[in-house]
Length: 296
Image 1 (cartoon, rainbow, N blue to C red):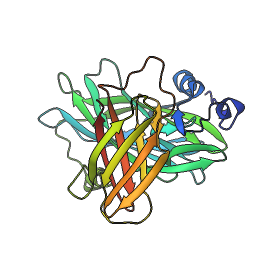
Image 2 (cartoon, one colour; image 1 turned 90 degrees about the vertical axis):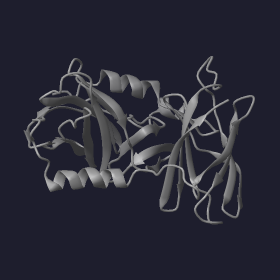
Image 3 (cartoon, helix red, strand yellow; image 1 turned 120 degrees about the vertical axis):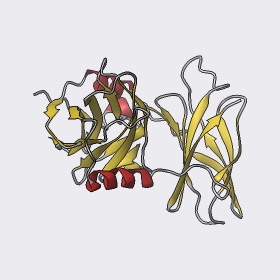
C-alpha cells in the first residue's frame, strides 16, 4: 500500500494565488491526482450497497440500483470525511482535487452525469477552497451502452484534506442482478441525495441577463433572487475545466433584483470564451440555483 501525501499550503500553491480570485486547479494537484497510486482494494458488497472503504481522513461507499428499462442506472457515491477533514466540489479551488468517477473501460456503462450538493467556501490560511466538511452524497446517472451488465464496476477518486491532502481511490464491483429489489433504505438514501441538489431556474430565482466583457476580464450578471435585500448571494462561475470565479464587484440590490460583476482572471492561453457554455451556481440563504450560461 502506497500513501502519497502532499502539503496543501506549500510555496508552489501560494505562488499561484491571483488577486482577482480566479482559481486554477494546480498543475501539481492534477499530476498528483493522475499519478496517485493509493488503492484501497475492491470493496465487498451486500445487496446494492458496497461496504465502506476506509482511509486516513474519511471513508466512502457506492450505492446503485439495477438498470431500468431505458438502461439508466441510478447510483450515488457517499463520502464521509473525518472531523476536521474536507473533500471537494466539482471545481475545488486553489489546490484541491476534483472528484473523479470512472466506469471500468469495456464494462458497457458510461457516466452521463455526476451531481453535486451545494458546497461551501473553506479558507485555509490564504488559500480558498470549495467543498464539504461534512458527509456528502454525489448522485450519479449512469447509462448502459449495450447489453445490461450483471455488475457495476467503477473507480472513485477524491481528495481528503486537513493539514495534508491524501488522494483517496477505491475500486468497486457491485452486483446488479436484474431481478434485485432495492431496499427502502437504499431508495431513501438516493431520494435524499437528489432532494438537496441545487434547483433549476424558476420565476423567483433566475438569471435575468449576463454578458462577458470584450476583454474577458469580467462577467456582468443580473439576477432575480427569492427575497429582497439581505446580504449578497454567493456566486460561483465555472469556466473551462479547472477554473472557478467568485470575486464580486459593483454588487447592488434593487428589491429582488441583484446585479454584480464577477471578476475573471487569466484564462488558458488562446482560449476564446465566445460560443462556450459556462456553469453558474447561486446560493441565496437556504436556496441554491444552478444553470448554464451560453456565452456570445
